[in-house]
Image (cartoon, rainbow, N blue to C red; front, top):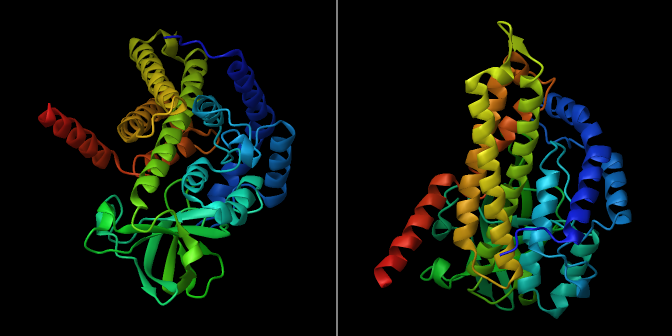
Length: 394
């Protein structure tokens, strides 16, 4: 097995690294100030004009649509390329990524019919449209089987009723990929269907924003007798669960890849500071406790990167079911970055708590990642369940 990155990915890595250094890192002070001053509002951390400029430069550098198939106007570089990119983007706290957002992209690619590709996929790929996915509910987060939102066929329409919560990007979305129960008896075993619901559809309401720890600001969305045509069914009726799970797998792997980048940034800050700061006549770098923090952090980062590359390699080689790899990566990546963020904060002392450095910002965002897209405990349960179930089959 060759662990060497191909030359084209090394070039891509350097291109993104330069983009982060030149375009994103200078924005960090502004992002920290905006996040601190917005209070409970959903004011954007990046002003619209600056974000538009970043998007323009993304296109100029050929960094738009990296995992979009060529037939839809992308470069289709694959998942290993995306892993390299996400790692580099994780080194900054600026909440910017190269469009289109990958998880919903792959859901649409796998499920859109030809008409939906023209109406939704292509505008999404081009940046004309943004999307949100509505899965979680007040009483059904990780337990998808407990979903209460219903879609009932009435004549030639589907009528959707329910409440979705913790929905990211709802304020900007042109359409919502909405998961609803169409067969209460089957539920996740053939009774959940995906629908595309356009912004502005009567009965669809963004009820409120939900301020949370860190930069994440999700929303609660109401569906009150929302009527959609048969043409808005995404994929097959009753078979929305598997593409939804695959979509979640893509995001979970991305989170782990970003965790590697964040952890690398934190380790670099730890190394720099420990070689500058003296206590009781010695540099922190000479203290064994600090040396162990640095060593353990480097070990964690290396292990997570290898896990990330392995998952990406499997996906690039046609493996469709990467749910277990995604769960392992989500747990390991977020928990290792939490450990490293804690070490970095402790090493920097009071400065680590301050908003003069990005450590506390990263610490809060990383803490949220241990819950977003499935809590660590749920992932551990599913990993163990699958291993034990397969063991009993042998």
